[in-house]
Amino acid sequence: MTALTYKATPTIDAMVRPQRVEGITSLIGNTPLVRLGSLERDLHGIELWAKCEFTNPAGSVKDRPALRIIQDALARGDLAGKRLIDSTSGNTGIAYSMVGAALGIPISLVMPENVSEPRKQVTRAFGTELIYSDPMEGSDGAIVLARELFERYPDRYYYPNQYANPSNPLAHYHGTAIEIWQQTQARVTHFVTGIGTSGTVIGTSRRLHELGRAAGRDVRCVAMQPDDGMHGLEGLKHLPSSLVPAIYDPSVLDDTIWMPTDEGWDMAERLAADEGLFVGHSSGANVAAAVRVGAELAAAGERGVVVTILCDRGDRYFTPLEWEKHYVW
Amino acid sequence: MATVRIPTPLRKYTEGKDEVAISGASIRELLDNLDGAYAGIGERIRDGKGDVRRFVNIFVADEDIRFLDGLDTKVEDTDEISIIPAIAGG
Image 1: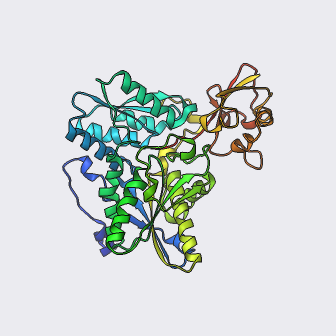
Image 2: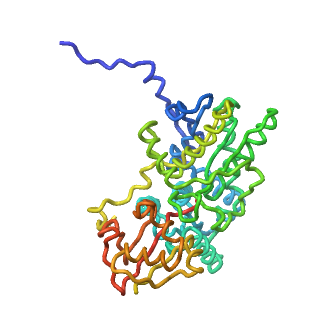
Image 3: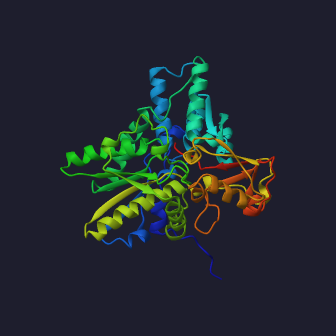
């Protein structure tokens, strides 16, 4: 009889990367860059890479700005004796909740009532107070309500306003952009990503332009927005029909791609099926936009290293099945 | 006539109104009549085949029509119908 013995292969050994940190917030950032090999096959001469922001501890790209916003507020003393209140479509709220719990800061969030149930549950699990705004008014309704609550109770709340807070793009200016530059060995030629608060695209693009210029070349930075105000790309903003975030600075953008919901949703499905990446719709839309940029370059016979963002995982968008919908979640 | 609540991104079709009164015995009829009254709004809600777009959620009172009879869901004059978009931004 032959005994089955475990034999470590070099591949498995290489996957063991012990790491220990002083606290959960130290795990934010330094996300891996993954190559989208299957999608690349249709794009001759193009490398397609995506930043795995879903590996942040609270599961999305929003961990970065939430941490930076809270760190900067603490440094200024803005949070002394106060609760943090902000409006969010979900991911920033989850990130604030995680960082708040870890650093001992009470959090209140204003979200449209139709935010997915998993998001509500995750934020509550961290001890966060949830306040709902009218679902018919969308995320702008949440912004208005958060502002009203802050104005009514200025002694109770600190209102960072992620849409206007410079710490939001700075998190990407000092983090995401540098990581992309290093992970591509300074070869990135194009950066493409969607607009929510615009923090990711503005902060990252601003720094990539600077890094490119210092290296004597241009990095093209392209924003993506839903093609219509009535869209299904949760977390993304159609600026022509919305309150435009104060941090939005179009001077750092070379172009904007207008993305149909279906193209983003189809790409999210394809990423799961062909790349093994089960990500949310906004990530699907980001990759669809990056593929468009890559296809244009390939058609012109040019080469390129195109980088985009995978904002979060697809399981954050699960909705209750028919037989589960009357469960008390 | 039932009351239809219109979300912000569709109010450009309804002269800015957040609620409109529309008749119809089913959601299908009601959406047809809504498009008749406010041209252009229909194609934002339904695709070329007439199905509700997969990212648009229609509620009769608090029930998603996907959990009722879809477009064939019956509508009473006292019902409130809400067209709910996805959540944008941050």
